[in-house]
Image 1 (cartoon, rainbow, N blue to C red):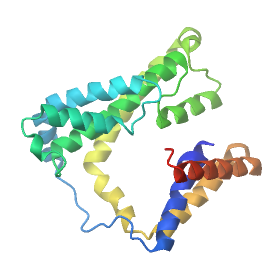
Image 2 (cartoon, rainbow, N blue to C red):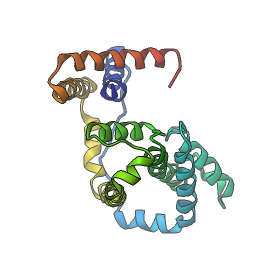
Image 3 (cartoon, rainbow, N blue to C red):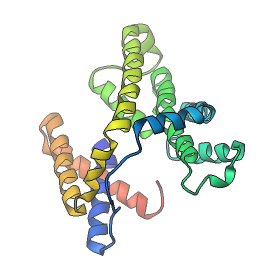
Image 4 (cartoon, rainbow, N blue to C red):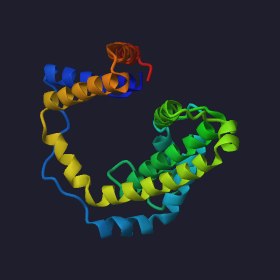
Length: 228
């Protein structure tokens, strides 16, 4: 179901855009801002980073307020409190920092209702609760009582992943961007292949593959009528 919700529909959208002749995202020279410049910019906007982190975490705690609306709220508040609000919405690095910081913080916030109450607050949390269930863990208050050591593993892992993502963003983003040079049909083909392969590999069952296709059709139908 998760693969059908998040992976296969994107491949179908890419295929539809390729058939319609609309160009996908174009990419010129693959480059990236120097890492020290990024860190200096973050230091200059340190209060904005802190503010957006609190906003993202707070909205992540609220069930059903996912990462889609969080950057809009953080960007709007950041613009209202900025010394140069006119630069927001025109390629401002501060605006980008406000939006992306809040999205990252939202993921951590969404883990709070997931672990404490068993309620996923975002798409990432829904994937996470599925992984816990597969390993025989029940998110909720009993998890803290029955297996408290697992909670500390989550905390340590979350910190380690955020540090790892920082280094990936600083040093490897330019290499990942090269995928935009591939034709859309090629990207879509790989997505479809790995979606089918991954769904089948869980239980080596074709029934799971049909479930994935059914979930993808449901998502596309909801998208057609404007339900995100």
